[in-house]
Image (cartoon, rainbow, N blue to C red; front, side, top):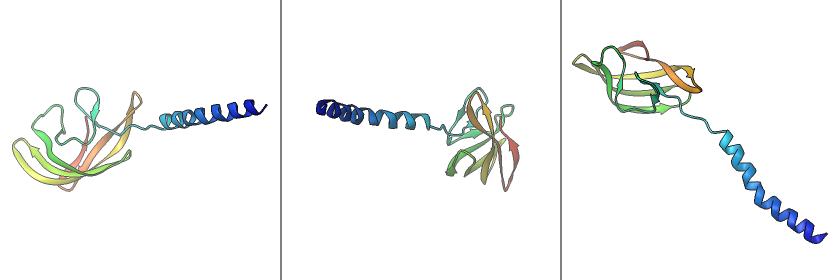
Length: 117
């Protein structure tokens, strides 16, 4: 009987971490992405195109100050057909496509509200 109890304790001790691992794996969440013009998306890009139809409108040298599953904030150079200006902006709004979350809107001073691709 003592051997059975000792064996049970050893087995329980060995299996305990497996239960913890499966709980951690199921709690994994993926970051919300900025959609790209093809398919998929990107997280915290340094450069980002604001229009699929006009490649001359984009943000460059982006510095992100925050990035959560609900919103993001950053600043960078807005390039609009050769002219550029420094802007601060927020990214918000969420849509889910095939189980992945994507931001839908970018806005800020000097940058009108833009619906993302």
